[in-house]
Image (cartoon, rainbow, N blue to C red; front, side, top):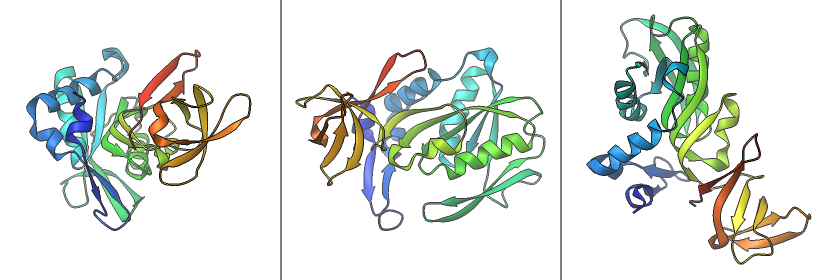
Length: 236
């Protein structure tokens, strides 16, 4: 059973029209599923001696960061909404898909030179994650990676961070993604453009193009620096 397909619901037009909200409520209410999420995220963390703290955004980021910090004996930095902290160290504002927001971290929460992981439940446009990167830098820390439960790939929020980003569950595509295909002219094609809600154009290594259905996508293919291919499950 794929816990993410079974327990993450898509809610259309929430919180405003045009937003497809990925609801993780059921994922949290099932004990076995929640445990698996934490284990999946924990496997993506660097080795113990390579990082010092996790910074997480209010409020769903706290849900995942707290157990990860506890089992690794690491510190947790809470990035909160204005008015929640008695002693504010640093403050950053950013744009949301549907407004603006500000987050703050406690005074003395990050010491100069500490290596900090950026964590949240979801990365979309990357606004809140970039704000956490900037907060870490303001405090003299070193942001080393971003870790997210869900990534909306079409919004390419990871590009704003300037650090490696790992996501457990991916939705959608962005232009340039390599796709593993079935029943197509080639096994791997590059996503060129969206043709319709159900179809997209891909280009193969020989420059030949083809329009394929989303149902033909097996996975997203990532090429690592050493040439190794990593396959990510495609979810629309």
